[in-house]
Image 1 (cartoon, helix red, strand yellow):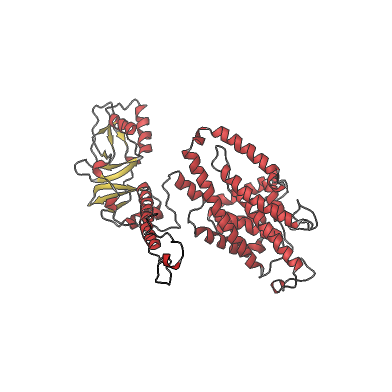
Image 2 (cartoon, rainbow, N blue to C red):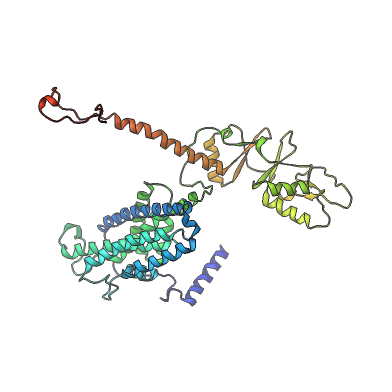
Length: 482
């Protein structure tokens, strides 16, 4: 805690001295609102959460689709040219809109600012408010498209600030609409809580709520987003509206999929990741997924030499090896990672006390005699995990998945009375989850088609054929023309 406090203090002092935001403040969007919010505005905040939830979900899907297309198309061979084309296209499109060509930090700061008589790019004007609202909405659509294209390029392109700018634009436009409604229809019962001599609607607050909602739908974070927005703006009075809009936005986005932007990138790159917010229901036992001991590469406690270990490290693609007493008994002793083995082997090779014939020791209590008095045993025992996490054979696969999810381990060794039977890795669980999802989708398609085909067709009330009623025949499923 003291280290964290010292680092936070040093960071705050550095920000104050350097003034990177050119506003003399510690946060880039620090604003102060003179007016509070009323209860009737909660409905508008919920609406902003709904809209931003859908927009954030669409932005994530479009971004991940373009990333996947970029990986399997010829564009991956022209990364530099793609960056140049996207940069030129972004510059040309952004030049047409004052809200797109502005610096993003400055734009978000202006969208958050309360109108006090000073004009800010038409945000506080009354003459062409409808045009400004349309410009903000068009800017939001274009920013979603440009952000989706830019993410995944060969240059760093983030999602955080562009999402804030998109949500702030949507929220500001919505706030300007509500402000116009109040000015033109102040006698409505909806605005009964507003005082006649005081401005009631603050569009900057709606921009703040929209930015938080867009971040929540994009990243699927809730409490973190609320804390971030409070730290960035120092607007404690609006924590409750932000919390409400963030909850609604995340709930709407979760209805179309639990994974956010960062989880989607993890799955797209094939990394073994099990979300803590999702429960996995699988069928079967651990024996169906494990790699059996007869197919594994193991290391014996004795009998290995430095040369055999070097060959194993050079030829084996695995990231670790179980250590057993012997290949006949397969009694488990521990587990050692490939990186630790490579480090110890490299130190032994550069030492004058070891040769390729030097024996290796992986277990305590093993009697390993060197071939000569001038050579020493290569000791791997300090790097062997003598208590790896193990499970019994036949363990329910859901318990195995829950162990991976809760403990964050990368592998589980399956044993029976101390004998190694196999291993299950997190990649095996992720592969099983994806395969089961595909099987569920395929199994659900035939019943759906059968349900559609079982729907009753349109029939006439008259028992006479259509030809006898003087009408042309209508093609049906029994018609030869079909």
